[in-house]
Length: 111
Image 1 (cartoon, rainbow, N blue to C red):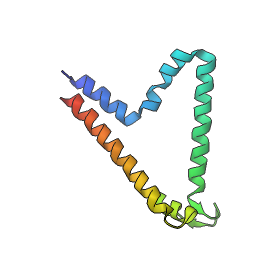
Image 2: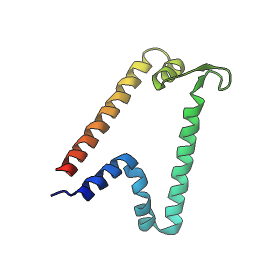
Image 3: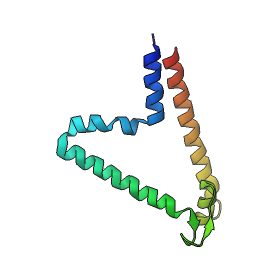
């Protein structure tokens, strides 16, 4: 039987994400040297992908290029052709799967 506390915990887990909540566990399992190294590596990867995404805001030049107002528009301008359709299908499938997972988790918690 779920309580309001367990339902709240599951909702917070879904909103914050499992990646953030596993960082304390990683530190506990790997120790100070490997745990901190892992967190630094993840931070560098996040910074790199954020910079890549920011560079896609304007194409082909980051300062004077045409603005890409949506993710699909950026993919279309960078990859061209039909790749933006394939990328859109993958993106929306991922979004749908995440929404289904969150809905199931929330409904189990509420019950």
